[in-house]
Length: 80
Image 1 (cartoon, rainbow, N blue to C red):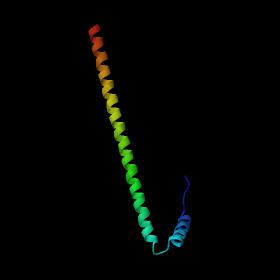
Image 2 (image 1 turned 60 degrees about the horizontal axis):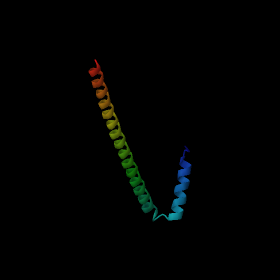
Image 3 (image 1 turned 60 degrees about the vertical axis):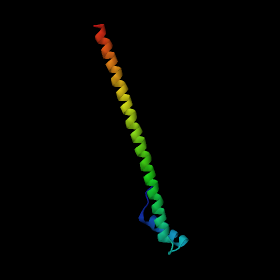
C-alpha cells in the first residue's frame, strides 16, 4: 500500500486551495468530511449486517448438528 508523506499532503492541499479558492476551501473540507463520515457509517452498517448473518448461520448450523447427534444417539440406544 502506498504511503503518503507530509510533502505530498502539502502539495495536494496547495493545489486544492488554488483550484477551489481560499474562501470556499473550508466549506469543501466540511463537505468532504461529511461524505467520508457517511461512507464510514454505511460500511460499518454493512459489516454489522454480515456479522449478524454469520452469527445466525452458525447458530442454525450448531442447532441442526446437535439435533442430528441426538437422533443418532437415540438410534444407538435402541439397538442395544
